[in-house]
Length: 476
Image 1 (cartoon, rainbow, N blue to C red):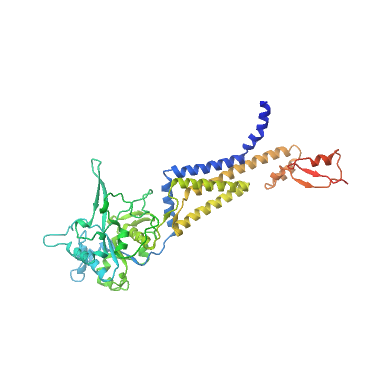
Image 2: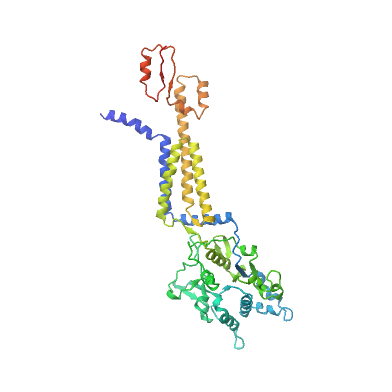
């Protein structure tokens, strides 16, 4: 009884132990493993963000909106104090000091607003009294007069800082220019950004961990657009659309050294045209010099903070924020499972390992290219790494197992044929890799047998199963 049961089981066991069947089982394991890693891997979100950075590098530069310009506190502006002359260049006197006298900011703001700037946002912290104040001179007074005159079109920076003290306590502090100047509430904005899991700034500065209630200021981008009276819809997603790497605004001649506004010769130049360049523009004032320590890790690489703000403002203004299409890890896991099932069925249908591998690589490439296009053009963020790896590894698995299966079949065929055929004939048969499998399977044909010495041949041949060679004889 047991022997008969075992004899019936042996063919089924052998069928499931075939290498090509094992390959499909391994593909299922690859899909399940990819789905599990999607939910539980701690490194995957960081790798995804790093891939987004690579997408931006491949995409390159996109022209920024012409309505936004940067007035850069750059290295050339920092050196202007060296060229001060009380007769020929008296306007450079505030640049002789470190930090500059605040009267220079008042002078620049006055000229910008007089030139018709739509709004000016200053990414410089004025959270303490000027170090140049004295009983005989109030360095903050000129800036206060400009704030009183143009406060509804001016945005000043506030900063939320976190610091640790030796007792291992953490101090959170909101640093705001309201402690120094009389400001309208809409004139103060947070300049903070939260780095993402890869240590780079991908998202708007809306997720700062504040518990300030009604005291929480607007983000720098929101406050700037409101000051400019530019309507904008709530962002579709939280990811900034970066127009290019550092100096993108400079490449498009939309970044001007700060001192150009003070220097009469540059103010009258063909570029600025007595301030006509700034008419109806949103002007951002901020540091681009590395010595001022405001170079941040953006999604596009190292970039001055003021330029990150420019990208954030441009993203809101043009409604080009990027949306995470499938934010839930569980939903991404089911996506991997569903795509893996369809992918596996398509590969199983092809049978031949080389074709399976090529199809898998094509699907992986199409998915990778589709996610790149979606990120850089359509504005949707799709999972990149795990689906692409799942498709590619599945194809590679079937290529390896299929190749092994083919080699085993060839060995079996060789051993079978060598019992009945000469060696050269066997070699000739095995030189046809696309046809040798057909030799292992039967097929039914119609033929006329002119002679047979087998009694009852016609009856016997008609009873043979279809997977054997059968010849239906025609009596003659």
